[in-house]
Length: 407
Ligand SMILES: *Cc1c(COP(=O)(O)O)cnc(C)c1O
Image (cartoon, rainbow, N blue to C red; front, top):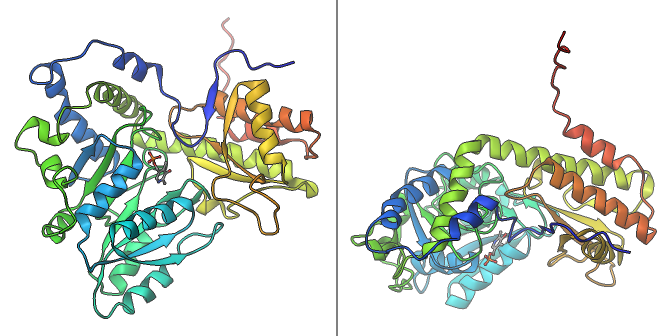
């Protein structure tokens, strides 16, 4: 018996759910790329991309995914002989460091493990030890999608300043942009990378690098820069095509326009607040399931350090894997794999899963996912405490006074 027929829900941390309005905007004939609607629309997209990252500075767009944005940032920032201080709080932080190292950057890593955020004190120490001034940039992940930790970007900026070090602050915001509060200018971020398929609700294929005035100036002579990835032409084009390094990604741009409109209509602050409320509903259900000794718990203990876009949960192996299989087969929901996560003493990678609550997601979708997870636990015979769904529902119970009945 299965109850999977109906609209499926991909609740993995990217690609996220594509809104019908984004799909509809892309469903059209090829536009003229030299004149008319498409070129007229592009300046507004760039303005709104700056707004969504809370910056008045620069943004470059690439026809690439998040890994492409890493490559763009790396090739523009570094020259042979430069060092990068990489702050690692999960698989994605490790990934960016590996890609920088593969380019030839001298990478210094500080690994904070799989359950803890960046410690700014360690950053300050490492920068103070850099007496030769070889560290060109500090690379960090705002939200590491594998551990679901959320790092304090402003605190890392403060640590760089406290060390009196000129290093640029470069942030991976792929998982957090338009989900968790992100303030590029107020937090003193120099470079931020993100992609279209997470909080921006558009199919994978576009990525972005936001650049501060300071980073543009500090990297002007970078010797690993190549024409295709050069962020100058893309962020300050003389000709329309230079913004894209060639033909514009026509349909992605129409989709992105619709997604940015959705964000504008809801309001960025409201988008962040919705993500926080849905995240809290997920946490309250998981905490309730694990109450009374059941082996179910959130990977990040402190709520202040948890992402509002994705939640990594530990279930006793092999239940994380069996729950994923169950909800996909019987309920039409796909949950995220426990990527790069293995519990100490565990026998395999089957003790973590990830619940995404990222992008075009609302209360009924999140409550639906939690309900199907509870059905999976019952179907699989996994011991869990009761009351999780009530707790999640209560956490989303917006109080509204009852209207007097019409006379
Ligand atoms: C998804 C993700 C990436 C990689 O993006 P791709 O589009 O898959 O290349 C990088 N960093 C973080 C934090 C992510 O969540």
